[in-house]
Length: 288
Image (cartoon, rainbow, N blue to C red; front, side, top):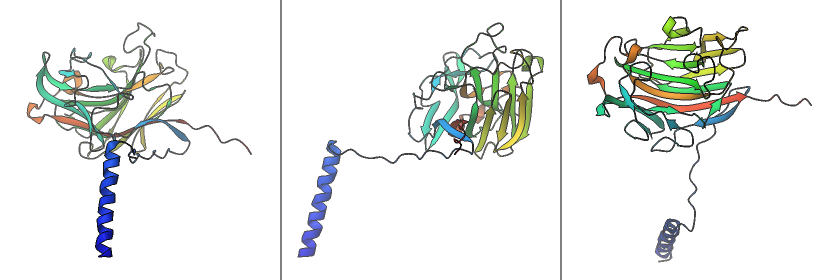
């Protein structure tokens, strides 16, 4: 009898605790995602681990919206806060391109930006992502300037940094580039390099940029394969002395993405991002 009474008391106590918690009188303490460990010499200053399901965190991400081709005759319409095109699930950011009619466009997708939520003029940027396969896909991880007041005030005079580009008709080939007034793709003078990543469509890889006053260096899984240097240049070759912001997007078609057509039966397609982390150079320890 004493054992049975004890069990009954514990059951009643458990029910009381559940009722009190449900009433809000006792706050629920939820597990927090631990801070990532910074690489040696760097300090974490901004990150998103995509641990909360739903729409992307609005304190970190905004949207570029529209379907005007984005200067490359792309076919998608970038939507705003639409979970079908941009959402967090299972610890990953999903940017999904879908074949569907939307405001005179044949496809929808999303273009997420950190503009005025995360602007930087140097640092280390790590984005761990898995890329979509298939002809017609054009995922990118890149950066544009916040202020456009160099040269004619347009692209490419104000610069562009491409941390990762991949076109579906060249599976497993990843591109890195910088663009400026004198070095840009329309003249085939951009500073650029490629690296084979055969399983880019099935495995997550870390695409990273290190950027300082003299160089831009780009890596895949810490393998350094591209460098763009200031080398005494002025704004026409080095417009990278100002704040830039990050962009994550998945385009469909366009001047580059549609070179070998589009596999229309290949949709929906998605770029998955495990995390985005931004570091700044850590201050040296004071001398003792």
